[in-house]
Image (cartoon, rainbow, N blue to C red; front, side, top):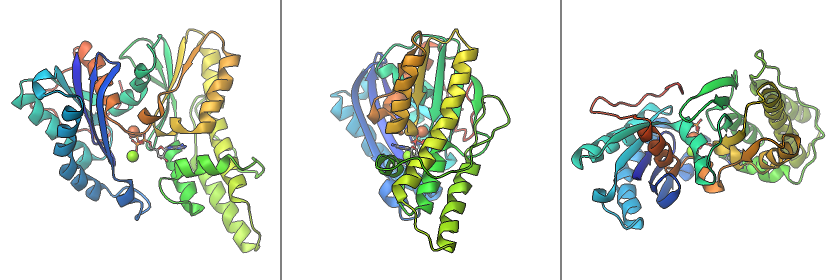
Length: 333
Ligand code: ATP
Ligand code: MG
Ligand code: FE
């Protein structure tokens, strides 16, 4: 089955064509980072307009690179949500137009489910799965008893981890997006600065806003006292504290749910090199569990993951019709 996927939930316009869940026939992404970095973050209205400008070209490019026409496509999948509402509408309208003009099934896709299913590109998932979603807007630990079933066991009660990386990078004047910059800088640093350890209420829940404020207060205190601090050490201390918060919760869940066979990661922060090392460490501690991280190109927003998730949703009978609309706060279920 050949599925064309469309993604426009935030600041990446992306289109991809994927055959039978695994074979990427084409994947094109137009990132708006260069536009939004001037503002230090995504400006929704600007993002929607750029999606409108780019989407038709990307659809053409994706088909051309796959050496296919719309006649060869079996279904059109699109991100319905969650995301920025104006941005989502662009992808949804484009997908509806394509599907109806070419008489193809239309499949709405949940963006976070797609981040998880990106792992299908490297392995078959063995259920029950524990999925860690770490992205710009989400930090969740999701139990999947079987394919297409999602139970949120824990999540951040305030900021998402990616958001915390970006905000800390802004405080440190490292530029946008901050995640990759902190990752790189932290490699040369040591975890030596005491930062507030996050405290979340629920057993598997997480928190990052106190840690983020802790970094801000630390830099202000240094400035007040005319002290200097080492950027790499601060990046490393922040990254280590944030990741430890997540990995403590992962261990609690893996201990409490011995039926979990497979652990996967999804979302932009799964590109983080220290996070990937920490997943490696878990392998020795839980030899009965399979551990998978998605390929680097499929960590941040892309449309291959939308096409893969669309294929799975299609197989589970999910269809969209003319009433399909974007849902900015769509809950995973
Ligand atoms: P969501 O998926 O929740 O809707 P989003 O789509 O905006 O949010 P993604 O594209 O999945 O988010 O991820 C973007 C985030 O990933 C940014 O916050 C960015 O800083 C972070 N990120 C990217 N690479 C790295 C890295 N190497 N280390 C840490 N964070 C990273
Ligand atoms: Mg993005
Ligand atoms: Fe995303």
